[in-house]
Length: 197
Image 1 (cartoon, rainbow, N blue to C red):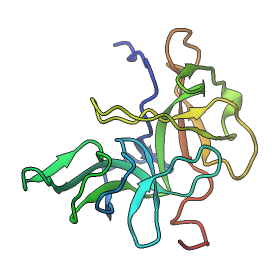
Image 2: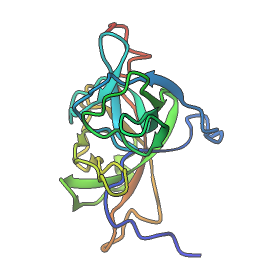
Image 3: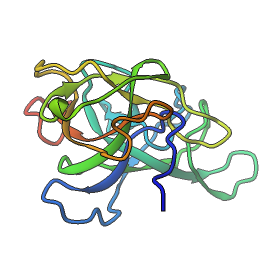
Image 4: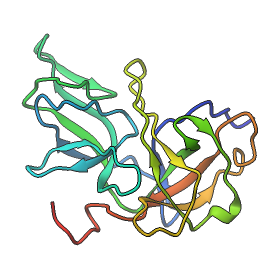
């Protein structure tokens, strides 16, 4: 069976742990402030704010993530019904809003690689061990999915948020699809950073 064609950035997707054990789907609930004015999409990096709520982390080079957003739950203000959504719609007023966040700093994520925006780039075996910036693309309100990606310009810069652990062999040399990498948080993760919020 052929590896699926990667036709665009899709955010960060948890795939396994740093020790190569399977990712077991674990998430932690974090509050979202009622009326939060930034949409958060499935696969977006999120940061912890003063007051204990999370929002989308839009920095490219120097992020302070708590983890990756995997959907949310809240009482819909229009129907008064419990609601589960793939993404947080900007401005939703709900006092019981929670985000499901993959916050373990040892999770490895799969991410598409771009040169900028949603422009395809390349990645090589020699990029393993290097650090990457993120590319902040706004997600889709149709699918609810993120469109953030990793920037193909690798470096040793210790403040870049992603460390390349491996490349996805099936996509690294494709001329018609986006290459992918396995990455982990490199710097700024709120559970390993000694500076508090």
